[in-house]
Length: 112
Image 1 (tube, helix red, strand yellow):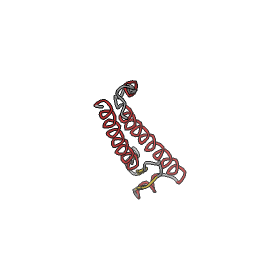
Image 2 (cartoon, helix red, strand yellow; image 1 turned 90 degrees about the vertical axis):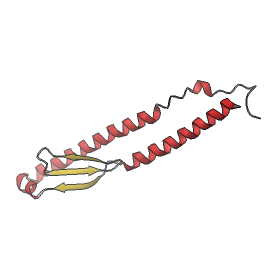
Image 3 (spheres, rainbow, N blue to C red; image 1 turned 30 degrees about the vertical axis):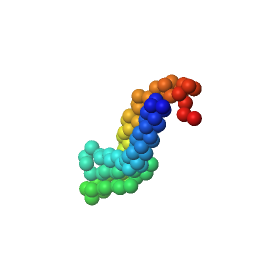
Image 4 (spheres, one colour; image 1 turned 45 degrees about the horizontal axis):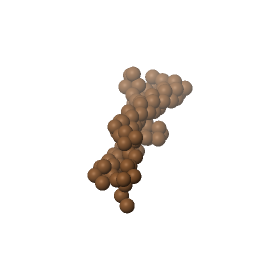
């Protein structure tokens, strides 16, 4: 029965780890800043822009079409960085080290 209990304990541990990972993923944000540091955007876990900062100097430096393109580029950069971070977190969660071949119970030792 010890093998069964260890397996259940491991499944409980994994379930808790997945809950923590899910919570962390839902709280992720990413920020991208223009090279001149005049424009910055922050995206949330869903890749939506939740903050856009534009220094007044940027309004004089960029035409409307340039500023629009810069914002679009920064949002894409922030979203790409967020996707990379999300991949790292998920890779860590997936590397549980469990060999599911060991999960098969010996019929002689299965709980009844």
